[in-house]
Image (tube, rainbow, N blue to C red; front, top):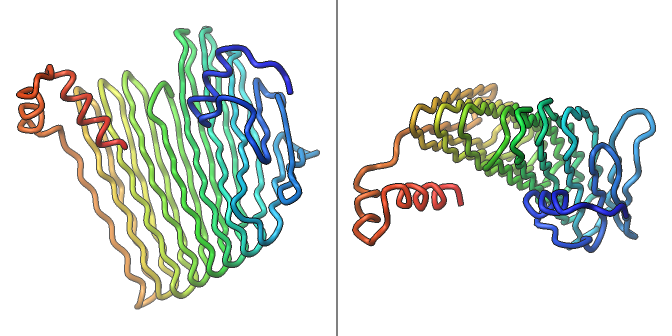
Length: 308
């Protein structure tokens, strides 16, 4: 494994909660190179030969194992596109930890675009965690444009935790999913923007099989002069259940756009969208200030609790 400097180690802690080399299967990518890779008896990680990226193959019946595939970038001006494919065998139950951290102290933009495709076998279950983080005092932007594609076979379950709390200047996060019979998708997005940052979240979920269900919920905070867009579309092609929700706090001069999309192509498709955008209630701030907090401290407490 390549030696990582203190900035790279800090980024790994932020995006993957890694304080040391993880147990199990992993691939750590640093400045467009592999800093370390390990497969296990049940999880094989193989570099692609035609494009930059990996194939991660998980054997049928694999349970209680994990895969870490974090990315860190500390070189200003670095731009990369990475293609990772996950093949999850039937009856598996695994956790996949991804995420990207960019520290840019230069004047050029740094950008990572990760395209992840998940082929989820029958009756398998995965928990996928993707965290994005930016730091550095340079004028160059920190840009992240993840694309996630999920193809779920019958009876499979996918739980996704998508987090971006700090430091990313521009991002377009695109998630597409196709669900077969009795497949279940649960997405929890947490997002905060500040300064002049822009964040666009796009979800398109096709419920193709009878009994398929999706629950996509986003919680976000837009501060300063930042902009957010939440664009979620559910397509019911069978007797299914789908729910999307956007719950946002707007502060300062922030702007938020919520775009609901429901398409029912079956008489038994039950689809629901909810959206709420508003400022922090004054009585919440006053209540905390009576406990000794300043107004700014009270706002921070409310925001932190909201994004948990």
